[in-house]
Length: 274
Image 1 (cartoon, rainbow, N blue to C red):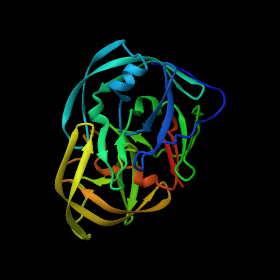
Image 2: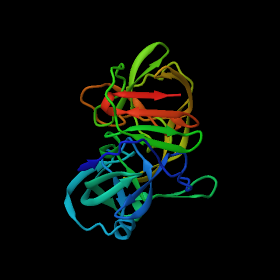
Image 3: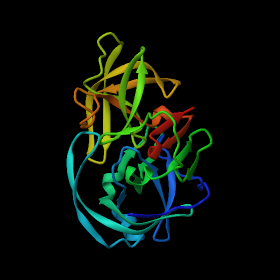
Image 4: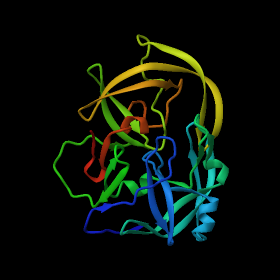
C-alpha cells in the first residue's frame, strides 16, 4: 500500500445513508463513490462483490483467514484496489477482502430499515491518519498525523486497545466502531452486577444467529477522562477476540461514541472522546 498524503486537513463529504448507529465515510474507489463503515475493528478493508464489479477491481491478491462477531473463522481471497481516495488523499495498491453481497446484508432493523452496506474501511487505512469523527453533526475530518509528546492511551493487539477505568479499576478493552453495541467477554466480572437473559440476533460478517444471552443492565466507565454510561451490554462466555499482550475485558463499539466526538491518532497512540 502506498499513501499520497495531503498537506491540509480534509473535511469529508457527509454520507446521507444511515446504517444503524455506525459512522459512515465516503471514499472513491477507481473513480466510484462508495459509502463505507468507518471500522476500527476490521484489520483489513472489506467490500462486497457488487462494489468490486462497479469499481472494476480485478487484480488478484492472496487467500486470507478472518473471523467475525460469532467467533467463526472464514476464508476469503483478496483483491488489490489500484486507487482509493479519501478526500484529496490517494491510497494506491490497497489489498482488500471481497465477500459475497449476502455477507454484508444484516437484514432489517426494528424500524424496518434495510441493513446493507457496501464495505468496511478498516484499520489498514485508518491507522495511517489522524481522525475527528463527529457523531453529533455527522462529520468526519481526516488529516496527517503530526508527532506529539502526549501520554499514550491507544494500542494494538489484534484490535485497537484502550485503557478504561471502571469503579476505579484500570482495565483494557478493544475498540470496534464497526460493531453497533459494546460487549463484555468472559474475563469481565459481573458477579455483583444486575444482569438478565434475553434472546438476541448476533450478526457479523461470519453470519447471523439468534441465541439466548446474558445482558448487563448498566455500566459506568471512564474512557480517556470522559464519563460514559452504557446500557444493556451483551455478555459472552468467551473471549471476544484473541490477544497476546493485554487481558481484554470486552469490546467497546459505536455506542461508546454516539452523540460524541472521537479523536483518533494511532501514530501518536492517542484517543480522545468528548
